[in-house]
Image (cartoon, rainbow, N blue to C red; front, side, top):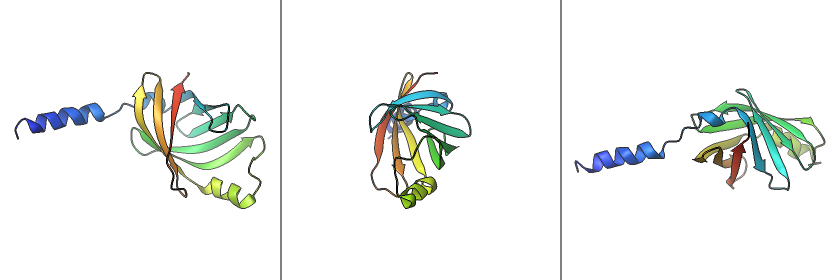
Length: 130
């Protein structure tokens, strides 16, 4: 039992991630719908530019802890909504996206995300480019 406690502490220490490098900056991630998404993140906002259509979407960002954050208050800054149903557009504006950084490899991180009204979790890899 004496040896188990130090082993547990070492394992837990190795599991913790340092996500500070990914809280602000410029990032790139593949789009699930083709092309790529360029993300610019400040302390207050997370802005996505979609390469396939030039749309620019901004979210407010709230960090819950070192590696988990919420995106909320979606606002289309440039382009046209691809979704035509006003009720769905309104729902997207109200939705909150929970994101958790689950793995870091140099300038890349892997995220697990979930929109609050959907049951499915999504995973993606994002690269810091600036």
